[in-house]
Length: 63
Length: 286
Image (tube, rainbow over all chains, first blue to last red; front, side, top):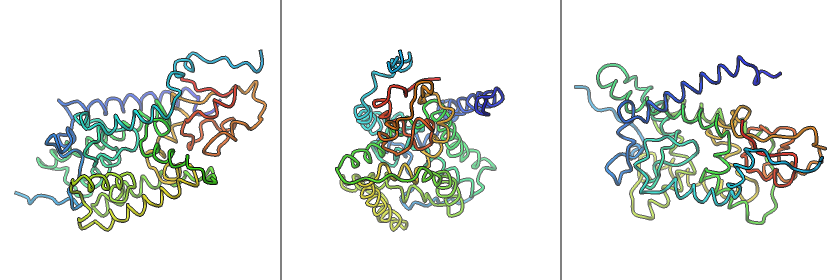
């Protein structure tokens, strides 16, 4: 029996999938982690996943 | 009776989606359906440029790059840092989670059946030119590309380097420029965007002579989900009791791999052409 078919690997794999499902659910849940910048295309008023046109992030000045 | 193919239950379930070109066309439309862009908070499991104004989903690579850039700035402390973390780091983790889940469920099935850029390369491969196969080890660069160009270079340079040079993004730039939607060809990093057009031209030309050169050599998403072919839900099942190693499956494989020997090869895009030519290989779910 290969390692990929072992119970230990399956256990680790199931845990990894469960964590991934939780993280993904948290990310796309509007009440938790959904990024406002990713909600809609530019035509709908969001930034649509675009990055600034210069291609470089510029931090706002510290207050 | 030996020689008679008995389809598995899951094989029968999947038989209704046997027409790959139809599924690829539908995926191309759905992935770029402007009216569905309210779904853009969902990271995608395949390469889909989300700088495209019509894109439905968000490319996981842009989320990873944004996370790397912000991490390099060390902005995750304090009140503003928390907001940055919520806006940038959380989606980056979501992108990783989506790739893990997508790979675990489908492996590279999404590459072969859903990815619009893969579809373009497939169509180019239909042009009758003498083809050659890339060696089976040629996919080893894909994970280093992910770690290097998608994570490390953006972290070090604070630029969206991979997006700037991505040939799929070059298509986005071309049509949006043509449609009058200003993008970043005139930006300081415009030379990278221009380089992406050259890169795209190279992929187009190479696609005439070999199947899916970008997917095989460089696609970071294909690298991640390809590794998970060995444990993914959608897989190729080989009936080793009846397989006589005639080699027809290997001859029919567009990628030039031998499905009977390595059905979980990371370069297999699950096009399932081997299942059409052999009775002892079928698609199965586990």
